[in-house]
Image (cartoon, rainbow, N blue to C red; front, side, top):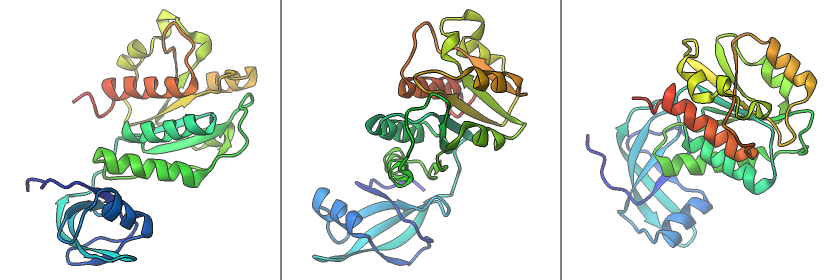
Length: 250
């Protein structure tokens, strides 16, 4: 089926099936009726991260209520490549940026971690989830990146399976030609799933480096000759991975 043009695409957190009538939340109603100025009969695309994507139409557009009718399924459900991002969180605006752009780049799990030199002590999981949902709506993505709760680095590493390639972006290796990320990923061992680890702007501590260097299936890489900000480093590493090993290569 050729996907029809729709001006809006919404994430709906409930089961979807043909013929179902759904009353939208107030923020979604405002977006459709007052921002996009859509009316009854307007087509929109909806998805829930489970059932695929459906065509829907606005069937009711009142002052305090907006309803849609689910029509036909446009695309079956597919999941993004099994790629995780572990990172030491940064200040709010740049944290939003990381959640948005990691979602756009197809990351399946976004996991803020507390490192020894991390300056952030609290992360708003709901805000990160909202950013991930907005990014999925805008990029035609069918699933929503999972936001893991803010945890210590060691706790997160305990959940990295032995067969998941851990790509450790080490700022202390900046400019080291033998650790160039493009060359390292090109010759990386075969794997079906991976995780990218970005440290804080103060770098990793000696104990964290010792632990990471002792891990099996851990690939230490350099992101070039310059020391990058954490958000820049995350997007650079994810882009390199997707182009060499992920869902860009085909």
